[in-house]
Length: 175
Image 1 (tube, helix red, strand yellow):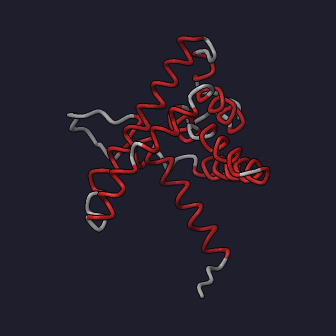
Image 2 (cartoon, rainbow, N blue to C red):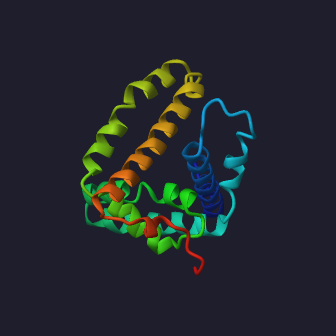
């Protein structure tokens, strides 16, 4: 019987949140064939760590509350908030509330496609299991870069349709 102290769970949540944002920062600005400090953008992802942690808590609370209704609304809410870390990586000074609203607007009409995108990686993760995790060295970057490019597609689509404006994506000076 395993017991994990609550402070360990909290610490793991904080570390996971920070690495999710750092990973989003890295893959969002990844450019192949550039020799200049590739890891710089990854480490820049740890900037504004308190905002990242509070954003992760806001997402967790929202998804949990929707999951109390039933599992399906919680899953839909998770897809609705899936772009928050990319928005924060793209706009470090944006407020958490605005990032949540923008994520909902970006994913409006695309939650089904995001679900299918997630399902498309099942075969890759089975391969990772069969290779005892060795394939993760190739699959993890592939999956993360795919989700970063998905954010850029959703952003471009929102700008093109007018559901979000360029002003929404500009950095705010007042938090």
